[in-house]
Image (cartoon, rainbow, N blue to C red; front, side, top):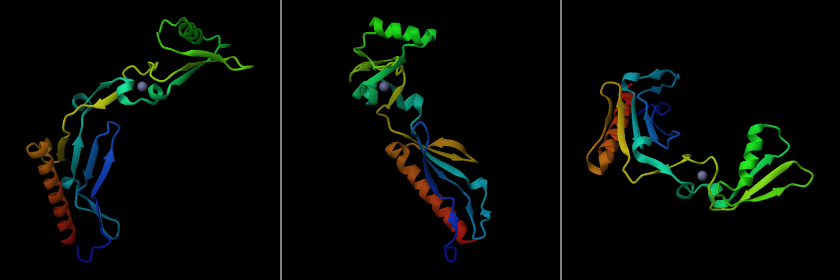
Length: 181
Ligand SMILES: [Zn+2]
């Protein structure tokens, strides 16, 4: 890296997508001192640690997921003056107690709003199928390569060791390319 102190490697950027999958994007590209991109997308490799939803997660109850509403209790507020049939039906349903959820009804003074207070540990309306938790299964160590496609490392530590070696080697190769100008 002699004389290239200002050069920035595309390098490893750790991201986290919505499925909580960690992705190290090791981009085979960098910018030189003039800000021009060097190397090419042919060297672009993505190193990823994956926990796919289908295989590494399962549906979980509010209790298992440590859901806030389940832990702390919650309130349901309904405007009792609303003519909306859906709102009226909700109010009737909540008062009917057919749902089997413990709750107490309050009415704020000089207000049309009705408040149902649900204590901790009760079912949370609308949370059916909302939570997922990781199953006890090792993550997948994947590499996407423009030439070889996407493949998984297997072997020691479910492929973690080989993945890490390849990641380090790839970093070294990019660094060497940069220092060679
Ligand atoms: Zn919940």
